[in-house]
Image (cartoon, rainbow, N blue to C red; front, side):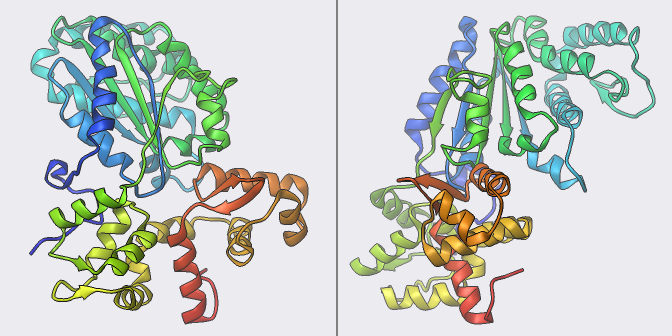
Length: 394
């Protein structure tokens, strides 16, 4: 029996479909690392469209001449009760670099000597050696006393590793869920920090990826004309599958799910070609009959939680103000800035704050001078909850 995974599988290659155009585009530009040209990337797209799968597919298939490190910013947030700091993000990057180095320790002996020399220089500063962190089994200093030196050490380390090894031609670092960086004390300065080092590093490429509207403040902050990278990043918007791609994908990976013409049109309208929705929906459909719009409607209403699973956690973490704005957009379909102020009774500053937060999370977008929800499945899930339970979920 075939099963379409609703979480990222261990064997990505087994379930990965197409995206050849994106892979070729990114890999072609990553190859430039060997020529001392370091391109930087920003990959955006709808939640569930496959950004993480794409980046993991890309880094898992890199040649040995390139080192790769994957950093998931959301894991830092999961460990914190409050907002994480810039230091904690840098420390997480350092831990992941260490994980990469340990996998290739047999060819990185010279790197270990260079790192030890760098740490010995740090010991002359105001660091303290009181924790159990290490890099290639070398004890690391406590990070709390000197942010400048910590950031310098972490940011210079990837290029230093490349320079120390003739067989290593480049270093690729993926920063996933980058939109969460907006919650540190000074996100703009943090992006400028990374930018300042990439300007002088010719063999280190960063790939930032996350769910954020193309008009989100966080996008402008990192790659807008006045942002840290000033539009110089290679910005890629990962699109959902087309109708034909969706058909082929289902034929290849589903448990023999079949539709009549109207049924498929309804299925595509519901999922919009987003792989996370396609997989979840296909897993609840019958494989012993032709799926019609009526079958789809019944299955959707009975299993909305399962299909919209990617929104359950997101909704639970939204503030009451954010939820109120979303509910209004469900009822009114679209609202202008002034209409939002009038409907909510919020001040201009409050509306600005929560519109920006929802935009950065990829939940709403600004289109034709109106704010709208970006995801129809979120709308369907919430409306179904209200219909079945008499109220929206808490």
